[in-house]
Amino acid sequence: EAQVTQNPRYLITVTGKKLTVTCSQNMNHEYMSWYRQDPGLGLRQIYYSMNVEVTDKGDVPEGYKVSRKEKRNFPLILESPSPNQTSLYFCASSFGGLYTDTQYFGPGTRLTVL
Amino acid sequence: GNSVTQMEGPVTLSEEAFLTINCTYTATGYPSLFWYVQYPGEGLQLLLKATKADDKGSNKGFEATYRKETTSFHLEKGSVQVSDSAVYFCALSEVGSSSNTGKLIFGQGTTLQVKP
Image (cartoon, rainbow over all chains, first blue to last red; front, side, top):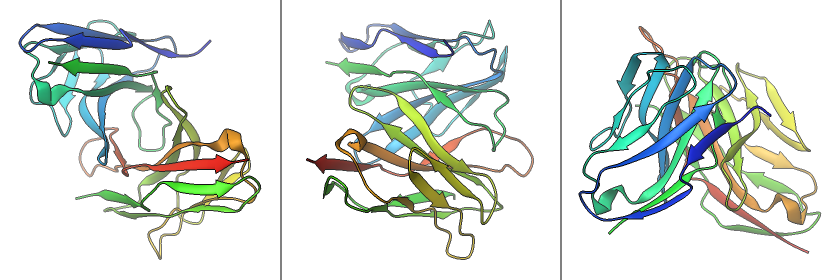
């Protein structure tokens, strides 16, 4: 089954404790990205990757890191989480990142930073 | 910059009622437009899309027409069901002048609740 998977689905942590949210897709997509969803704000892009070893900042990159060492994986790293990073996070992928492409979303990771 | 505005929710309807969720956008160039749906506890799923002016996207009884003249992409369904209860997001995909970012710009989402 074609899908985007994320782990963990739920995470409660404390300020300053490094964490990684994994994202994997099995559709051989070139393009992957991360969004965060906050009430009243919709989804906002954090980082994106057009291909392996190619990443760039989205609209809200502060406090986050990413890497793209393999085509299928695109982990999101929070080196020193803070309470304002409490949010619902979605990974997405598409064939080439073109403006006509459909993006496929993972199930989401709900993160709480205390 | 580019932006998407959706009607405020929540929208509460009785089963078999007609649904309209308004969406307007501001963008340079000719973006693609999308409606995504988020069922409780799940990720976003593409509902329909349109990639050029006057295109009509349709799926599962939902329709939306890309109206360049009014910069709108309103979502409609003739007869809603309880199973349509979800959050609906309108989004546009930016058209970069020099580089492609693949970024989707989302509206804030509209919650639809359908009662039996």
